[in-house]
Structure formats: C-alpha cells, structure tokens
Amino acid sequence: MTTFAPMNELSRHIERLLLAHDCVVVPQFGGFVTMATYATREETEGLFFPPIRVVRFNPDLMEDDGWLLADVREQRRCSESEAKRHIQHLVLNLRQQLLADGQADFGSIGLFTQDEDGRVSFSPCQAGVITPAYFGLDAFAMPKLTAAQRSGKHRTAQQQALEEEQRNSSSHITIRISRRGLKNALTAAAIIVLCALFSSPVDDARQSNQATLLPSTPAVEVAHPAPSAEARSTVSPSNSSPAAQSVPVASEQPAAPAPVPSAEERSTVSPSNSSPAVQPAPAAKYCIVLASDVSLKNADRYVKLLQERGFTDARVYNNGKMNRVVLGNFQTENEAYNMNAKLHRTSTEYASTWVLAL
Image (cartoon, rainbow, N blue to C red):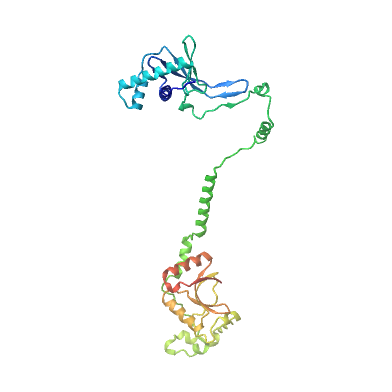
C-alpha cells in the first residue's frame, strides 16, 4: 500500500479537532461525526467493555464549518487563501490514494476503502477516538450469578459465619470510640490527677493554726509560790488586820507537798534549772525544726531570740538524743508543711527548716 505524507497530515488535523468538537467537515470530501456508545458486555467471555467514542463518516456533509481551515492556519501560520489551497491539496492526495490502492489508512480514526464502482466507505477504529473523559477505563470480567445465587438460597461459608456472629451479638451494644478521642481524654485525665496531687489547699482552719506562729505580744503568767508557815507567822503587825492576827497558826492547813517529777521530765530539764525555755515534748504530732544537734546553751539563746521576734511557741525539744530548736504545734502534716513553706518565703534564714513528726 502506498502511503502519502499529505494524507497523514490531514488525519492528524482531524484527530486533534475531534478532541474538542463532535463534528469536523473536510470541504469537498465529507464530515466526521463522533458519538458516544454505552458500556457493553460480551456474553461468551463475560467481559464488560467501557464506553467509547466512535466516529462516523458522512459524505453528504460538504459545507465547510471552518474548524479545519482555522487549525491549518494556526499550524502553518499562513493566510486564509493559502490554508484553503493546502486543504484542497490534501483532499486531492487522499482521493488519488483511494483510486490507486483502493484504501487509505486514516490513523487512529479509521480506514477508508473504495470499491470498483467508486463508492467510498469508512470503517471506524474499534478502540474509538481519543477521549479524555474515558481515559483509564478498561474491560473487566464479571461472571453471571447462578439461579441459586439470584434466589438468595446460596450462601458461602463466610456469609453464614457472619450471620451467625450477628445473631450471637444481637443482644450487645457496640460503642465505637475514636482512638484520637480516647488519647485526648486520657491526657486530660492525667493532667487533672497531677494538678490534684501537687496542689496545696488551704482552708480557714489551717490558716488559724498558722496564725499562731506570727509575731504577737506574749502573755506571761507569773506563778507565785504559796507562803510557808514561817513566813505567815512573821507577818508585820502593821500590814495585817486584827482579824488575821486573832486566827491561830495551828488552824491553817498544811501546804501540799510538791509533786515529784518523773524520770522523763527530769531528763528534759537543765541540771541547773536556770533555763525557763526548756519545755517537755508537746502534745502535738508535728513541729518545724529550726536548728538541730546544738548545745543547750545555744538552743536557749536561739529560743529567746525567736521569742523576741514574736514566735512565742519557740522551744527546745530533746528526744533523749539531741537538742533541737522547734516551732509550732500541729495536729496534721499538711498544716506543718504549709507553715514551713510560709517560713521559707519569709526569710532566707529559715530556708533549711523542716517538718518533724513528734
């Protein structure tokens, strides 16, 4: 078969124009008309073929629609008259090829044939013309359903197992929770727990207990010893009333003997009994330690200094091993720690204080 280059050029023009137009007319030859066909199924092999866009040739369409003329002018960059002469030249070459060979390959569009009587017929390409809307579609196989499958009586083992599982779980309610939502909820709960653990709540009762450590005017109680019998008998007559002198001395009740201190109280009292700051262990459960392992003399001096500053409950505490200077009487551990933190903020002198369980 003889191939003419001008004819191939004409087919390229038509292929390009059919991408955007449904009909392209070649003057003095005929018109190419496109139409879309539905998806089809091949029964013997059970294949489904996607929709395609096929081309039909109508030799009765002779009137120029201008699409081919405009494309030739754009591609060749020539005038309108030159483009018309070039189209006439391409059509003439196509007719000469049909007359000489009886057929002409029109690229991806189809095939032209001419019989002995001069009648021209066109066979479109079975794959259709290039269509962007149908790109990527391919044939696929899908067998027919059997009679049992169409009636719903045929069930696979997987379907039976799924139905059985659904019947067994019909009484249960399935709640689906997003993993992201669950993670966020756990994070929020952890933050709340940490805040609750490290927070230090202060109520009115603790504030009232802490107020006792603030500087205030100490109330000093002076114990007056009871006068002895000799002192009462030697009272000056000028300072006593006649009624008092007329009472005999023998009628007075004898003074009660002083209680004997226990061994534990004796261990916490200075041998010279010259330090009034030494006190027995308080009944409270917690206190704040300001100094540890100090001599009794230094402890007394520091207690007096603290009392002058207003800490009236400062005292020396001895547990049988060492002398400590302590402060406060607390019933709970939280009260002691809260006041200890307040002391830390008051001055750097109390930065090393700590809480002791009595």
